[in-house]
Length: 371
Image (cartoon, rainbow, N blue to C red; front, side, top):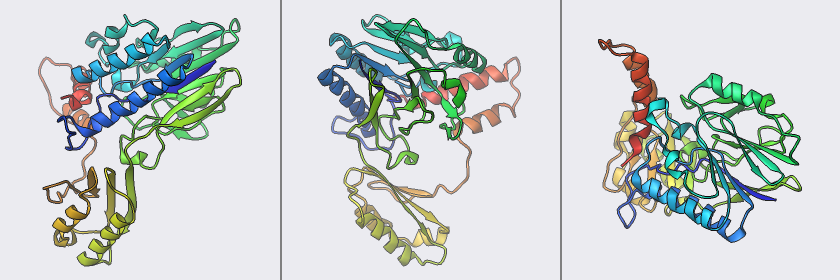
């Protein structure tokens, strides 16, 4: 039995100001393209089953464009007779029950099996049983459901699916405010394979558990990581990673500017740019020990010109895009979510529940990338 395991497609994600020829955010289209590649490979190679381990969408309330795109891709798989199991991840799980789930609109699609209510769902495919545990806004419910999961001896094969971090010999998590983390020993229950989502780097945290990783790079912490999915042969138990064609992301070595003059910093920046092919790439150059005086003396125009082939070029403490100057962003802020939580608990709103405001506000912040 041939199974494809994918996760963290984050449809609807967008970043930077660059638009494509149709006027859409280029990074949003890159994310679309990665998922399209995966679906086209499925159509060509006809797996017996596809497992999507969460964060199909980037937000709880995806845009109409994102919904339409995903609908089209799922209908392609359905039309080809390829069954697909999808669990919800933390990015697409509402924190308030009354919000409702975007996944409800996909329930009519044939061959599509969904788990998005926080509880484990069991799906049967011949002699295989899939135990699909989605993300939950309730940590106690997640732990209870995970602890209750175990292989069914009535089936030849058992696969578990979940969307969470893993803490064991190593810690595999994204440090997001609403993430769940499973203990490594909670996964080692005799399942043939544990299809994980949430952690964006492809890896194997336990003997039977595998993160497929995300299908695109969504931050410089993922620079240099191959992106793709896992192909599993359930009969032999062997699996391998299949890389997708994605936009390059380069994170250059940090330049120590402590004892350098502006001309020396400029030369080091130039050398980094000339050392790699930046055409169409997303590029970051970090500087350490540079003060505002040094930054102010840099030849911004020359740097913009040298970096013009990149989709996005970023200096630590500043960003350069076509027609823009280096903008200093040295102020140290917490993440937007942490800033919001701190603020909401410092003020008093008569007749309002601060906790409910916090939950609802965080949900809107997560959906803030919508167009």
